[in-house]
Image 1: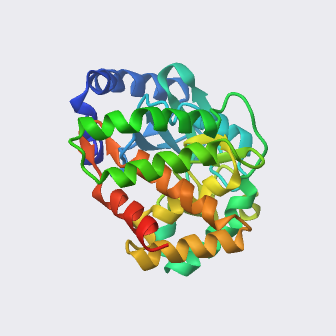
Image 2: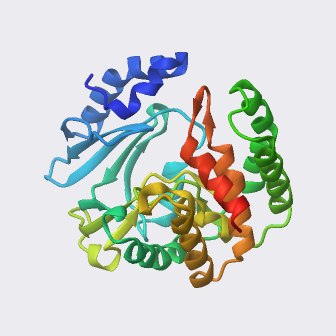
Length: 298
């Protein structure tokens, strides 16, 4: 199978190699089950295999075969919960194969193609529509944070202490305090960066697309948690600029205009970003930079 380069990392683990071995069969079975015409994979892929597809009536769709990570396990549940409001619509789901059939955004332009402040305008309008009360089956943010707190020191040691101990101590302290003092719990997405919001001027599967677009969220990694956590990926993400000034500007605008506590947003950003700065043997220096900027300049 012609795998996008962004998925090369899956070859490094037994789980990844098993997933790769199953993909051709699952792809064929899903195409037959849903009577799809499937094209070559989208090249921009880092966590799942996604392919353009057409339904029997010609409607454009996307067939997504998820890598079996825990963070995206309830993606289909989140999309069902939102039911197409500010997010892409789920058309069908095969839990056994971790396969999702999704409507396709047209033209699918990523949000980061806009100037940064115009992109933030979109986020400020979109997020309140995604903040819906939710419970099971979604993992609570407090439970997820407990896992980060438990794993981070070991991951730091295993990776050869790739950043200062003070960053680790600060992140652990912040996560501990924030997790136990949250506000109202809503559905939040821990991966809503500017590459996961796409232009949806036309949605062939939905005659009411104009009432839902023109921008929709894709690829959620859902949790239930307080609203302040939901802007973390947008604050730290490099898509709208990677510098101390750009990060602080996003922190300030999103906190102020969405009515969020700036210090809680800052704390969640420090904790979550450091937790995601290590993945097995891979270190993500740009995430560590964000943590330093927020600790040293605020």
